Image (tube, rainbow, N blue to C red):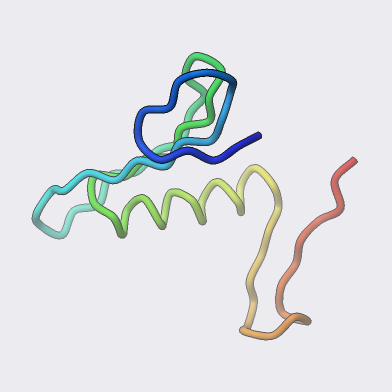
Length: 77
């Protein structure tokens, strides 16, 4: 599945959207919309955290410490 920025037309893809809200309260989510996986946050840092959340909850990816042995990427079939 391709990764796209902002509004992408065509085949299903992953879209990462970041708003430009000021302040410190982060709002983030990920969802499937019209066949696309949309990961979004109200500010760039929130979009990054939404991406981490998706990878952890849905794909089982874990980062325990900065070393290949501290990175867990479950095998997918």
